[in-house]
Length: 306
Ligand SMILES: [Zn+2]
Image (cartoon, rainbow, N blue to C red; front, side, top):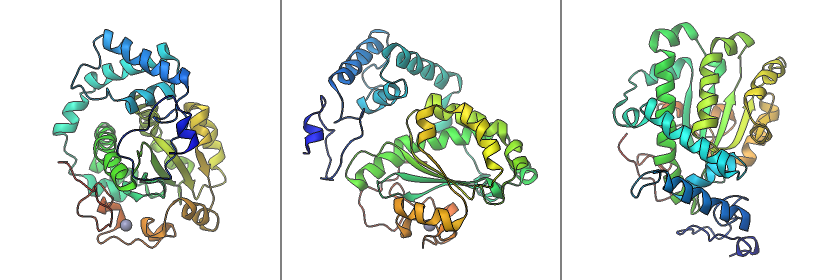
């Protein structure tokens, strides 16, 4: 394909139909010799210690590379992260959550603290929207607990990896490995942040340590002036590479233009400057290539059992 790819020490993954696809450095199809060797060593050592048995999930190159990139291709550090994650999955009983966890309060929770996936950005990434400013803690706590919210958060991450990304990759014609997140702070106050601080911190910890390298774009919109105070705290929880992916924007005059550079109007809900108005509301539609019920032209929108 392109010269960038030809220079890579690893081949592109199969099944790519997008002729313009250029993997980022550290992704399959764009590895240096050193990175390729690190990947081989990482796989060999994990196999020798009983991980990555044939048929096990999370043994593919793309997954191993996410852990390697998160630790800058330092194999011992990536190994520690990988093994800790496998331990955490057992302790937290992630497989059981995936199989059995039900969240019937989803629509109610969505009203008082909207968090949802909706369609995809121009690079094929699933869009994840969270509206902290709509938080009504009293109503939220009447509807659910923090622990149940965390389980639901993990379930959504599992579905993101197992269903949304494969469907988005098929639709885009190239691997899609990350999300595009919009965090709306309209009407959010410092107190609304502190009210959900523990939940947000636990989610941040899970995101960074259990699902590394899944964030492609992160837009914080309607950021109030005082947000910088909170940001100085949140920043400390994130690594510098993550901080560099974050775009902090003000009101509609500032953010709409920036969002529309990355997201086509028909994929962006109307309230953020797009034209999408899903029946029943964008926040409840779960529209996207992963949802068969979604009216979209792309193929590949397969839905696995929820
Ligand atoms: Zn919509």
